[in-house]
Image 1 (cartoon, rainbow, N blue to C red):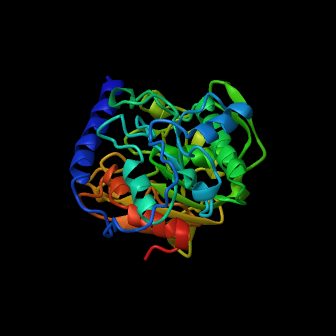
Image 2 (image 1 turned 30 degrees about the horizontal axis):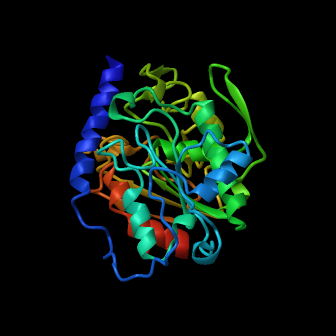
Image 3 (image 1 turned 90 degrees about the vertical axis):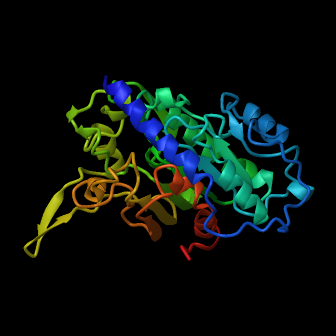
Amino acid sequence: MKKLVMAVLLMGALVFTSCAKSGELDSNVSAGDSKGTCYDPGVNAFGSHFQSYLNSTGNSDLTGFGGSTTKTGDCAIVNQPVVFIHGNGDNASGSALPMGGWVTSRNYFKTKGYKPSELYAVNYGKSGAMNAALNYHAAPNISKIYRFIVAVKNYSGQAKVDVIAHSLGVTSVRAAVKGGTYKEYTGTSVYLGASINGIVDTFVGISGANRGLNSCGSWPLNNWTPTCGPTGLSINNPFLVAVNGGKASMYLSWGTWKPNTLKMKVGSYTYSIMSYADELGCMPAMPTYCYVYARHTSYLDGQNGGKVYYSYPYGHMGNKEQTAYYQYKMVKYHTTN
């Protein structure tokens, strides 16, 4: 029954998505902007040159998009590569309709001069709305994200990469960049490697449940689905306590109760995009339902800035689909203007 509830919640989000896609982006897309002539393999597979690199480095299990037939000439990597990490039930290409993947954002970045060799995304978890209650921060998924970010950085020859994540991808990236041994509550573990926080320049977290989801409840009195479980998004579960460096709570300061500050910063610059109309992270009819201990769950402590929305079309999916302009400004210019 609880599994069905999670699926229904996500289907509600998908309705918002399909509507959100019909709206305009935050800034006009100029079709005349130069894209260069680098061959574009599309969003359903890696470019052959990047695929060969992944195969040669023990990462042939990874799928997604990015790269081209070369990384020289018109495909020379000039811009800092952008790595997109999708959310729960979604995938890189957008074939898990109507969630959309990263097609909108990728197309926008291309209008701003980014090449296929500078834009990347990786798949993880189970795609499709009916799998919404089954995905969580599984060790294989965290490993894929970690290895992919490292692979893009090393392949590109750039000192750092930018990472843009949505929904479950936000907390997954935050776990991955910590490195070390990642261990699920069940005991399944994987050694990731050294921390990669230093190779991330800008991290943009969109609609992330950084403090957990009120709809999941609090650990251990949470809804028992994988997504809401101990390695999922229940408030103060073992996963979130580990990734946040402590429990979300309130503390007394000068006679006023305030939310504690958790250790959340990723990369050199961190930004969030959040909404009080987020039908999964919040409850639109009750704006304060977005709060976990008096702070919006999508807020990233230590962030350099962010965008906050309060109404349609900026729901859970609209936050991603409608904000390509700001995603670009955050990673390229470290600004929210």
